[in-house]
Length: 469
Image 1 (cartoon, rainbow, N blue to C red):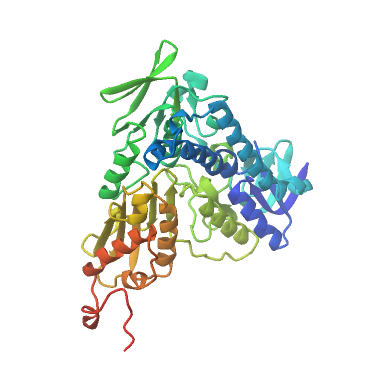
Image 2: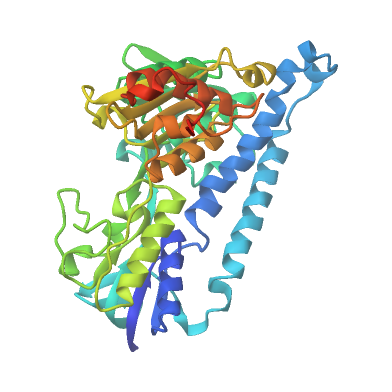
């Protein structure tokens, strides 16, 4: 069958659904094409099932402090891991059903189940059907990256796509790749009683590029499991188990979690037939403010774009791509302040500009360690650091790195302030309630302020208060 549409959207994940919303709003004739399981990566195998697992692990791990808080019986608490995994899947299914219930379930012929491939520019093959589209939004997502040499280990290699489908958890596991996925799942498994070893070929975790924050994060993560950094990883058979080697260190485990990132599904799309320019990685060259590929009518959105694999970014890219695919003239949209959160305990967060990308001669750095923060102390979470980066002359906040309990909340505050081009002085003049974790931010701002230039009349005045007359 041949079919003509104004907009074809490939992929029914977060980005694709957002693009579809824009095509609908513009009144365009569209088709949404999806191969494989429905439900967004976040809801099915990413953000949400991992948070369900993290919540259970956090609840159980609290037993470690019950004794000193006067709560008896904590040592007898344990988790039935098969029941825990069933609970995680139940939570996952509820969230996936919510997504499907208000998107693809009632779509009729506007939805096509199948894998799309470009035959030529503007022409797609979906099974036996041929789609002619005036505009195409490619939002077909990513899949876990697994080294080819590891495939022979079969089901003993887990990924974020398969770990939540396990009936039980192994006694010992190696987590290879200590980005968001590896750290979150690794710490959760350790708190549930699994013997975990964390390994990364880089010399950092969570992508941290601030050396002080990096040291703090590694120290705190190593309370849950040992971390090996800076070496290539090799796997070997060992009497039915797997010996994992990194440099001079080795461990024998039951399974390995491959958490080295995700690879694009572009290879399924025959993107080379789309008539667009590709970069050295084979990813389409596009404008991040329009999501348009060159001067073509092909738009790209979501994880497939190679940008940060974060839900709100994927949704924004889908909206931008969908809007421009549905209109003749492309509109350039502003992108939001970078914000990334690793939901470990403590949270690891980066906001705005990375320290590594800032000029040390023009950048002031303020910090606050959590030791003196009263609320952190009573929570048993007074380890960690808040680091703020500002322009020395203007005092405008540029970025931040946090290793802190409830850092997710502080990171949002900082992202909003950076979006408004606020200065350290303006931020310090906002109220900080006592006792809260936000006082860590107040302390970092106080540390930062003497390093930025202030008007002479402000030098002797209380910094936290605005002078009226």
